[in-house]
Amino acid sequence: MKITLVMVSSIDGRFTRGNESDIHLWSSKEDNDHFTRLRDTHSLIVMGSGTYVAIRETLHLSEDKLRVVLTTNPKKYINKSVENQLEFSNETPKKLVEHLSKRGYKKMLLVGGPRLASSFFAFHLVNELYLTIEPKIFGKGNTFTSKTIIDADLKFMSVKKLNKKGTLLFRYSVH
Image (cartoon, rainbow, N blue to C red):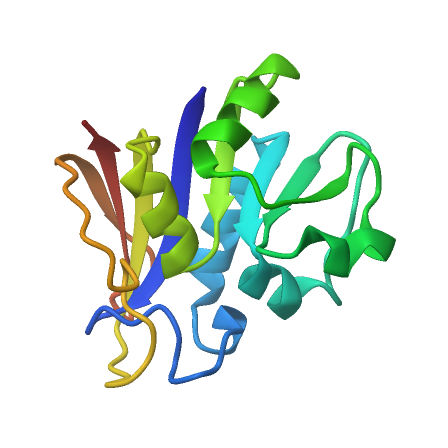
């Protein structure tokens, strides 16, 4: 399965502004447009529970897209589950990928924060990374790997300037 991770960060490497989990409060329209285009090309989207909590009020479910939320407590969300549209799991990333591959999925979009990214990198499952760098400095907030040691080799593929403010979109392949 091809697994693509998409993330947005401040220039000082923060994926949240302090404790604020809603990236839409500080990320650019151009980054959101890129994310929307990428999301629309994937029928499988995996996120962490923090991302789910941040977006659940605006999340629009559809029959052609499965969203899986990784959480330590799937039973907490049992009433929110919608078969083949919104599922909650506490599987390891490796087991989740095996399970979803058996269901016929060929590619996955990972959306979310450092814990999700770290867990998939720890299993060497990420194939591609889209990283938007916004021209902002926060000083405090979550960093990329959430205190997990990651040893991943990346190959630069491209960079694109998204707006006049200097928002940059980097694309890497992961080896």
